[in-house]
Length: 359
Ligand SMILES: NC(=O)c1ccc[n+]([C@@H]2O[C@H](COP(=O)([O-])OP(=O)(O)OC[C@H]3O[C@@H](n4cnc5c(N)ncnc54)[C@H](O)[C@@H]3O)[C@@H](O)[C@H]2O)c1
Ligand SMILES: [Zn+2]
Image (cartoon, rainbow, N blue to C red; front, side, top):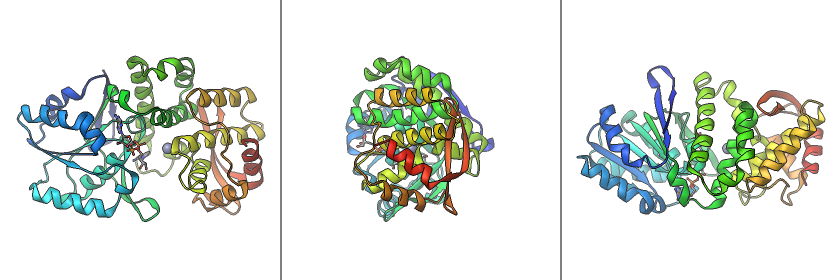
């Protein structure tokens, strides 16, 4: 098992990463000294796979547990679902000291985190992410939120968990497309800050496909470490944290123009390639690095070409992005694999050229 300490003063916490570690949760909770009353929030799929047995193991260790179930899907990240959960917490007489355990993917993590941040002005939050994306991205860093209508993550807070437990074994039940989506973010961490992680993924694509414990543990560990380091330096997203948006400017445009038919990971994969091509056109990133990026993306089961979306609509969507100012858009661009810089000087004509090349 591997451990990361996220150092945020009085909001510091540990991330535990390893295979088969769900069984140790009761012991860790006792060590920290949480109350013996607990709430687990999960969805039906994760409940059947891991929730019922987690509840049992907590109960047999003397905890009083209530398990609250939320239907599967992004639309559950809503104020309506939150209102229902507040009622259920009140029915259970949940108190300021009652921890909420978020067991599931990013949807459950963001929603439960939002509840934990707001119920009784804040109760302890424990993230138990079960998707690759949640293990290496959404469970770390304290961004919690619900959507408001079509506006994603509009109502939320910065609220750090007290502990994150990433059991690598839970990835074995994930559909292949969810693994690929998570890998897009792991590749992102490689490009922005860790050339070794990038090479590691590059040379272990077969082991990733078979979800080898050791390889997956390494990928989650190194990715989580980068996210933790970036968050430690910029908890509230005023500066460095922007580099985590590499691939996301064009990525968000693709998601929205495709009416969310293209998944987040797929869109980010293409977005990373477009940003790499822009950097290459500016004479910064070497062509051989663009090729490496393209190959690793394909190897991870992600698309390297744009779906048939109109370039003009994509440019419009990029323009609408909050990162645009006076006809120029802020972009995170790779200098080389392992190092990025922020440019707010990117003209829409060069973006259009890079988009067309991605077709
Ligand atoms: N807070 C942040 O910093 C942050 C960062 C990135 C993404 N997010 C958010 O994360 C969400 C996406 O998260 P996601 O990709 O994990 O999707 P998700 O939470 O919708 O989970 C995907 C699917 O996998 C299922 N599932 C979960 N664990 C499983 C397992 N071990 N085996 C089988 N099935 C399992 C779920 O039931 C669900 O159907 C979005 O709402 C996004 O906004 C938040
Ligand atoms: Zn992302």
